[in-house]
Length: 363
Image (cartoon, rainbow, N blue to C red; front, side, top):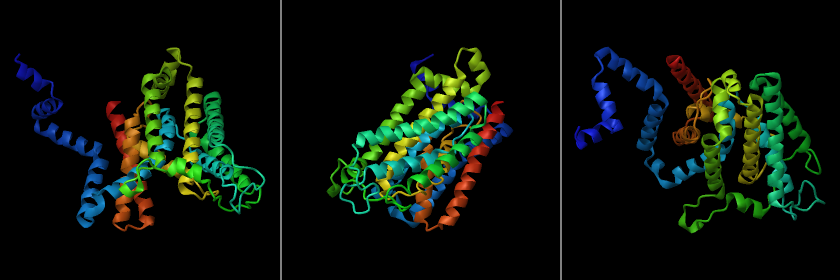
């Protein structure tokens, strides 16, 4: 075989074209049908971007793209946590409420000392690092409760996280009525804390500032990629998600793996709440409401399968970006927020249906 022929066969595009040419007419039609089904969401997104760009040419300029980047970064941290729960064929409905609780705790403990409506007037502002560790601990505790009941009593994560969601929401309602707050939104964030999250190393005069929380999201993505792909824990997570009985026979501590996945998810919710508290600036009992739904949708769009044992961090990132790009594109088209919810619901149904179709074909 010549070097030229060897290089040709080593080219994925060439191999794809050769394989396609060898198909019969009916097989080619089936191939195209599977192609459109498997890539339906991406095709719809491309069509949507083309429509928006034709009507609003400025959509593909730097500012809108940075807006999508910032939206994606703020939701990515939670999605990184909940993705592990989905790999285990579960989910976590408490994620949004944990974000809300940790956001309210962060905002209340990091209010400016001279703020007139300070929630705890006699208490000085806490060191930022202490608050960060505290909200991580809160998230980890909720994750521990979820993981314990799922692994110890074989309860479905949907039911367990629904219960913890209600308990955490009740805790938020109690907390926002502490001190002098009386249920009001918690504002007056310390400038140092706000700068730590929303500041930028790029001067605003450049008109392209990228907030610090975008870089934090990127760092967390790299860390989660390493955990999923380079550690024994990550391998065990995939094994348990694929077949917990087989994983147990292979020597994997299934209960511990499940618990650690939920604890890690809770930690990510805590970090997300810490970021969101400063990003939005005014936090209340409604902070984080339904945030877990967008995170779940992004994971499913990104190929994290509810059938278990399937999913990649890169897919989660792509799913979050696609979901936010669709939301921003609909806003540019002046589509009502009411219709946006309907469209997101359709997207979730389509993504889950496509995922199940792939599972049935493999099976």
